[in-house]
Length: 418
Image 1: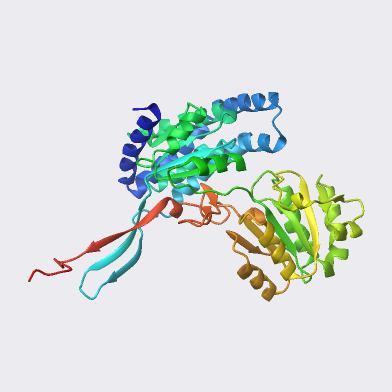
Image 2 (image 1 turned 120 degrees about the vertical axis):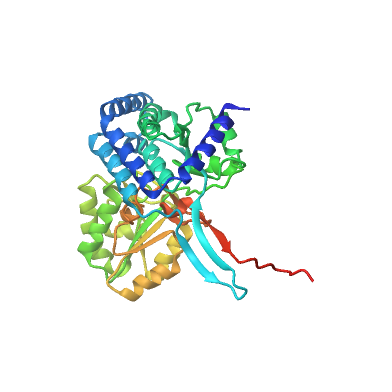
């Protein structure tokens, strides 16, 4: 039996133990994990420094460095996220349907843990803690396979979390970190469809496509976040600029950051100069179509590739459109089904925008940066799904459970013996 299969089987056994814990016990465990992260903060930050230095030595770009970096504030945020998850309502055991059939049997649909979740991710060491917290709260085991660029950070975080498991008298295998980072090991993990119940890749498009194309287990994924903001002709200009700056600048390396700005032609001459000034003051490079460059002559020319790009950087593509329908058509052509935003003063336009688009998150007069499990009240999210399976959009606790039927009867049979 291979090492990775052995680890996966141990995680499955430990997951059964977690699933039997009470809500209180799982909450106490997450509280202990948060305290362990805080106690081990110096060691975790020192490990992260090793990863950052190695990344700089390799010439890694700013977007990846931002995803990789921890600091005292970010680490404190990770610990607080564990506490927030601990305080969330427990989905396990929730009865979502309850009815009695004409023959007297009582039928319930009840949430139960999925089982074993394989997380395959790049750069973001906070995923190690976030994924563990959500999986454990929902009664699942988790197998973590991070990237080589964050190996020291992930190892240090996992050691703290596993110590909390051990001190609670639970099997450490419920949280398993894969230390063998060879691609062959990841491929073997993705073939274990008799042990792994779900794989969730988080990282660049290349990683996600690799996992989706090679897995024999179900995969929840989103390839990239090409997020749009459409500024309608009835939009309040200050409101729209606020959404634009927050969506593009607050954390450009995030998948919920804005990549394309669409502007109604009737408002373009008033809106774009003020918007361009606000963005340039914050170092954003602008690329626009011919109509945009007529209003802003010093903007770089945009290509079709720009409108399909996920920059993850301080770059923004701009297009002026004749109306709401043209904006919707543009988004439908280039969407990654992640997040779309409209700034409008006309409620009917907002409703039409929502109804026309199928993206996982659609917002009216709110920043794209709210497309996040924590901001939407789910706690620390385990991922964002643009795959129409059992979950769509930011994934929280409920997405880590399934609903099964529980039937109670009094001896009813379908075909009585004659």
